[in-house]
Image (cartoon, rainbow, N blue to C red; front, side):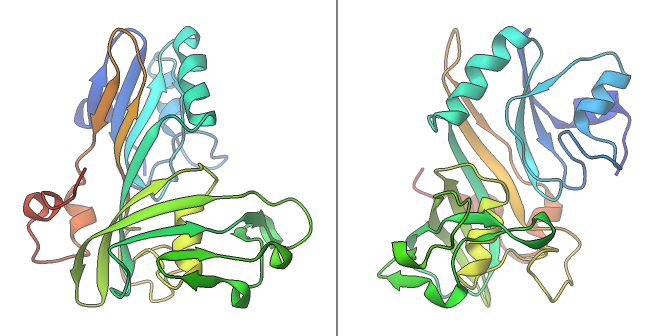
Length: 246
């Protein structure tokens, strides 16, 4: 996906001041660092605007992304993500509607073949106790692994799919995608895990972000576009999201 920076910026703008820029990124364009694809930072630089990503979301993920316009703002903001004090909420549509109203996924992540993120334990070692998924300490594979926690709330069920509000407590690469897939509820349209492959995009959207900022905390929301809701035909997004407790 390529776009003119001025057009993309104008269409995606959520918030801007002298220090930061918040965009509602469309699916299909990277934030930064893709070797073979144009990304937001590169597009902006080509148009004369220097940006420093405060955090990243996957190329296949749409939604809220925060970028600093000056290095003085970048450091304090990125530290909040590292300290896990930035509150992030995603919307996800998953396969299978038989999920609890609320759940916690506590599964360590590691890197397998071809640099792919996976659960750092055998699949059969994953245990569900009530509304919590985990593995016993003795089942964690040797080598580098990273404790990872994801909370979710089931907002809506529609046939064989469910809409979740997901809060990644840790912020590992591909965390939401891997956690949900390994408990048997892959994101609809995810090229890594949804083998049906019938949807035009991955149903994951960066929805809300709250973090400290001067002169007042930032409390941002990026509404999903029609391409996200297309995987749940016939629902009223405003009505459905109105049932989410916060």
